Image 1 (cartoon, rainbow, N blue to C red):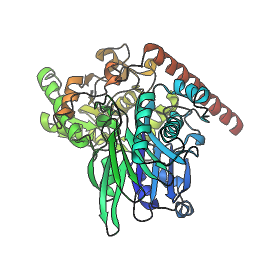
Image 2 (image 1 turned 180 degrees about the vertical axis):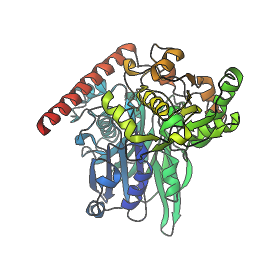
Image 3 (image 1 turned 135 degrees about the horizontal axis):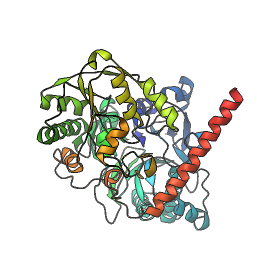
Image 4 (image 1 turned 30 degrees about the horizontal axis):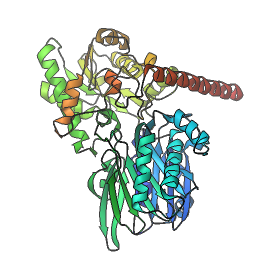
Length: 502
């Protein structure tokens, strides 16, 4: 999961890019980067950490130009803490191109081999984003014959990318001396929107992973980039768009609405906040119809993304809603942290239970989802330590039983608590007195009732139905071997670090 941003402005773009990345910080806390264009010259700065830590005043002054792209990163492919894999990436042949990518290519190994053997291009990292950049560069070379580019040639190149690349990708790229290019995979899995603002000097354009970046910068949301579509804005601000895929269909990742996106964003015509209210309604209906025996005194959300669902659930059930868990906002998300012990420690640092809201009460805890179960188990124990009488647990999403291979660094199958387990077994594992999962049909309806034109979603982490057909059991086995190797490498590095410090 990452956040991407691209802008064509009439004044310096550096501050707009920085402010926009702050609005997308929830999509990536591992690394950040900005590249601006001043004529045919690129200015780049990127590094590890939060946006506020990566960029200093001196870096911002160096980012000259009215056009640029930005990126915040959570690692999915490649090593988790390599500065070399911070984005955007850059190539200088056949044209100067920088690219930022949100998603994951499921055929990156095959493409890497093709680039080396056939296209005579070299990839320096393990990042599929660099693979995608080199595929785009090669297709531009083939389409243009190393000559001058125009929008039609660029769109032909994007068509070539769609034919070769499989998986999920929402992309912003700059071509030196030409303009800003953005495109979305033919299945529309990862989000991408664009908007405009009118200034005294003319129209400015902003492309972003989520509409919240547009809202906060004063841009008006125009629409989502369609699946398979490419848009190109030249340096003068002229706008071009074209459908570049032969077979395109909209299948947005439903986990964006459950957890990933900010509640104040609108994705594919659907308010994220409203979907989370609908999820609470669906949970309340399920409890009312088949779980009347639960004597719930209070509903407590596990902050932050579950709060709208928990509030709506409490309202529908007619019970008190209370903030019993206080969040420390300076600890990262736990489901992607390496090592169980580190995750357990992080949960205690991240949340603190107020006994006044738990003592002697039958508590219904509401979370957006249960992935590994580590966080859920720790929170249930915290509630018991705070004096809760009974602890019921509700997940606004169905059980996560399969890895996500389209840009969310979810665990391997053996690490997912729901793999091979029924609800009762999961309930015992997390230590709750009762466990309620959202039904997948109800989750889909929570989204589609806001935009009835949405009929298909990417739901693979819940049902194993992968939209892109090249995801086989053998592919998942390969991913798990790579993940195991990566985790072993991280553990070795940590052990060496502890040895040195001792």
